[in-house]
Image (cartoon, rainbow, N blue to C red):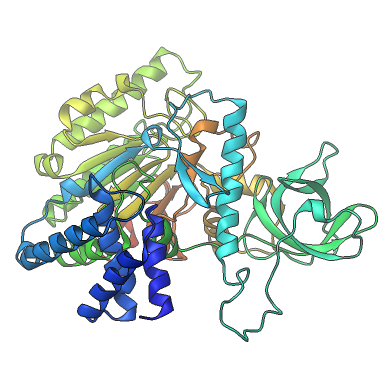
Length: 541
């Protein structure tokens, strides 16, 4: 048995907080040898055993050989009937979950243990001073642990590898007394009280001199973004920046291989092995399944219901019934927070008309899940992110006529088998551009879309801005995290429609439904890609 195999076995069991003795390790090695498991499949095989061991009621931290043998025998017996069970129909409704942001568990990152720890206290909407500190600390630590795992920052264990290009992070505390020395810093972009651009980390703050910075790397650099900056510390206590960029993004597969046992969504964790099995099942059994996403569904606009009716009629005619239809706000063309009673009544009438429209198509009503996500101008219980769902008083008829209605928070998530879809309705393009502190000159529209997607995913956060620019409920800041990377992120924005894939994460913006045409997006879970849907209206419609 090679040392690498032993290290893999130990690492996987340690991931589940279990330690192996020599007898247990020998037993697992004998299983791999007995079944001629190739090196590429060792991790998946041991992952299966470790997860089953972790489910045992009498499982202890120090792995018991007797329990381990029992787990192995159980898996052997279940394997004999697994082939026969593969043909059993799987109801997709049993594997689809709509997760409200206010129901997601809070996991803190522990730098001491280098692991996530679940917070057991009841979360408060208003939060506290401590919760604001913990929220920012978690953002820093989660990004930093990804950086330190990146190949450019991790020394190789292979003897003789050239380490000259290995990058070493330093803190602002290392700058003191070391003028004219070159450093690589990691911290948050901020402005001092004097309005000067600074970089702040957990040890201090230093003023940035960007006069010799030709162009930053790709992405949007805003106040509140965490960046890597390379430069020299000067005698006048400033940091002369020569290069600046966003932290490297870690793929979903890499993060899941390490933290796949953690239930970030509160709906049950799945292993990477189960995810791969789910992926195959979706491709084989649900190849034609689709999700529809709409944004800016102005129910007070006379053309909106006509456009939706045309889409639903087309779905019936072509027997292309979507599994999920997501309507993102704004559900009104203008804000009504300060409106009069007539505005409130029209707002109510819009949802009632939508309920009647959906109910007029019984086949869709019975088979399709409908998710409603509030926008910035909609009436909800709070205005800060994450925003609570639409007020129930406006959706009474919808709840009565649409059995599979889900009132989602903003943001909210959809878990479908092993896939995670994040739905977020905010005009992030405009907000990010208003708060830029540096961007490449002569940026084209297509570059802006790519830069926005890259910046948000690199920052592992839906709103990588300071709290005074984008207020966030501190005890629910984790609901805006994008770590591990989701399968899909829906950045519903009034900006023009786009769809991009970055580090394996598919990002789409359906665009405003009402415009030059009726725009929406269709997503296929089988191939994890989306397409633009445009409805052309005839005069008869």
